[in-house]
Image (tube, rainbow, N blue to C red; front, side, top):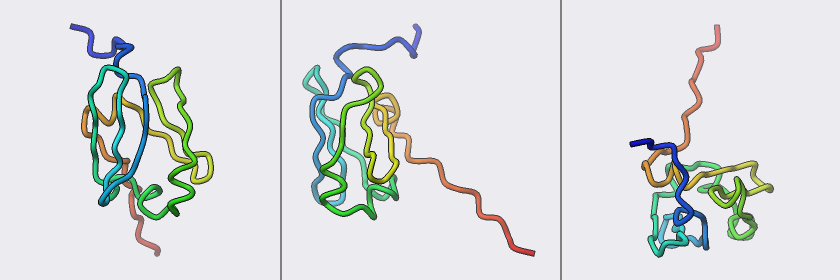
Length: 91
């Protein structure tokens, strides 16, 4: 089974936010919910910035230009939080 095969049903239909979560509706009727704490840029964005999203990546991604954030339905379905920046100790 090829897990990287794109499924048209996994395309973004709608995005909303509720009680500390991002909620993404897919074209196939599924709904994905993930904690905003996984996506610090979205967590710290204003409600207006969160509402200013657009479908990207041929329908399989979501883009917030105002905060330079991109999410994919593939990552959301895998339950993958945003990568954490490595903290370096100042010498």
